[in-house]
Image (cartoon, rainbow, N blue to C red; front, top):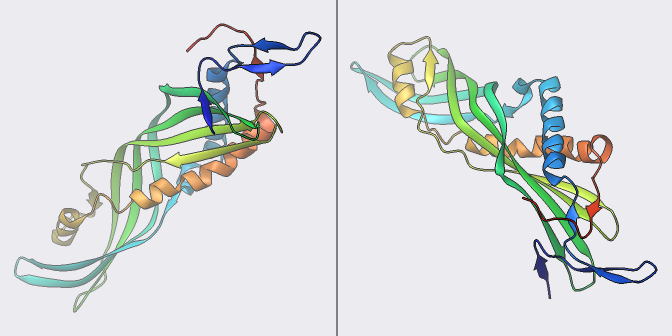
Length: 233
């Protein structure tokens, strides 16, 4: 039977007296997860944000613009992260948890949510319409908020470490900006699907996770445990 222990976690510590110890906590867990996320961000900045790429997306177009029919495809290519206005950690997301299993293994997790605020993404746009020349545009779009949940996992029995990073589906109603502006780009703006970048944005977690793993393995040591210590937020 799996027991979830929070705030009060009882273990037996066998020293001279083999006593029961209450309130086992991760030391300075807030500073720890903040350092893990910050070090991960430093590495992303060193590699440059623009290396966070997005998959190509092709949409079908069947529009009549000022009496002229445009039938074919528009492809959004070379998508990447242009800029971020701010980076933050959601305070309420920082948490620690102890889980004990029937085989006696104790798993400890420390969590924190990375927030990328006003993340602008860009695409090259190429049209392929029947009977017309190929047109080239640039498109830019801003996600007000992108979030990635970090969960550092430590096996208190074997001391093994791991980390997961999970991206959440962004929600935005912003309008894409396309240049140069003409009748075709105006039509493409109205056809732009705000969800086309969601899959790629969520998949950035797969790029962030190995960096976070290197951070917890080589750069930010796990702080250890506090026994019979005061319970803090």
